Image 1: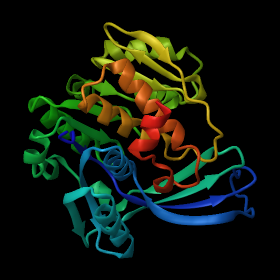
Image 2: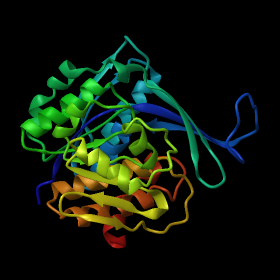
Image 3: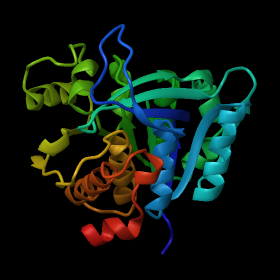
Length: 304
């Protein structure tokens, strides 16, 4: 069977993770353990996850001409990700993130996206041929909004399915939404997209409806253990989560989005695609670190 062709326009960053008994408060120095450093960035994570799930994955990204950048190139070679549109530049350092995990597996992340910030619409245009030949085009918001919007525009123009994972969330112009087939915020990102505080108390379902009124065709809100809210013209339901022993939630969203992209590219119904994606997301919570936790296709198929 021909592999589904999926292009991710997104980010790479090296994640540096340390465990602590709890998340720190401002100005506090506290002991930690189990330091780990490895590849990350939402776009990169999703591309790797897509490749592990059997997709023909390509990443459009910018990395620095430094030691952290070599972590990216080695990763894509070993995982089978097409890196023809990954630019190496001396203008900015490779992106980096600092991650603190508590005993419950919750995380606190600080990012310097570095070379990722050099992406613009013109850079995305250089990958137009790859995008035009893709079944699914995906993007994230760890790159400038103009680049993410261009990815959605080119994907839509080519007849591909477009998926925008609005993370980390920022206020977006309504003009971007008409190019997005599937928007996949979590509950706090949903609120930020609407100009609200991340912990606003209004019901998630009500806010998802408001987002659809702004032009988003299909909204999929990931709600952790509560499941995934699927809201479209035809569907209004919650797909349940998959119970697992949570060790580290850091890569769950990336695994979910990758699973969604692969399942949609394979022609599954939306509900089945979300179920497949939910299994992918749950499995990413069972190990420390993102790349080690991204599941292989055989694992997901067995659990499905």
